[in-house]
Image 1 (spheres, rainbow, N blue to C red):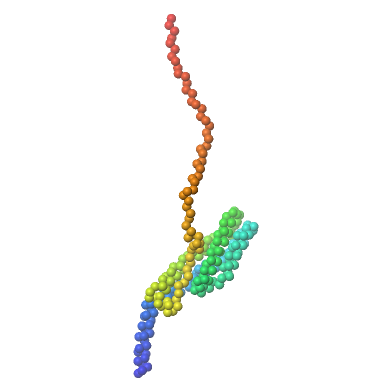
Image 2: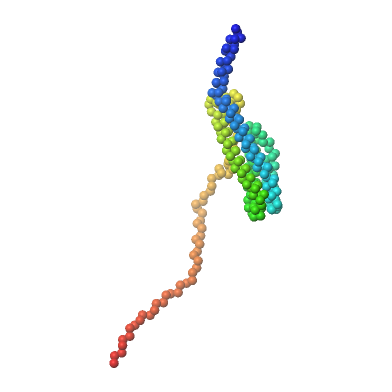
Length: 232
């Protein structure tokens, strides 16, 4: 009889606990966490796709512009820095490691941009079929990176709101859920500086009108004086 009574009281308590956890956002945390993992995995996938294009891209450019050592070295070094970071799914739980990873990817973006600028100076390189194909792949990958990053940013925003809102913040404290890092503007410090506008700068000198040949004074014909006929 005692055992049956215990079971009788157990089930309502379990049901109450389930309802309480659902109402406090426990299930939301589970689904949001999985969405963040999936979106972050897509970000890593696209970054890896870009890194895989770099060696072939560098080799093609080197064939036409071997003396552009500085730019080629910058791209190679940037790829090495990206590869030295262990980009695991757990990276989003370590804010410092996340910042280092994003900084390395930003350096890679800058180095690739400089490489594309150099390529513009070599018409034969721009006409190379392999280079055009790699350039198209790189542009497509950059677009995919942007889409994947935006999806991750949106997912993390919703998750962080849940972590910080009441009453779900209580559930977050109980189960150890914390806010996750997100992407920021890469040149945040640069764009924070307001542009300088100098209204006191002197106006540019007016361009003098081209000199023209001096006009000759117009000479009017002498007036005609009527001549009276001679009388006989």
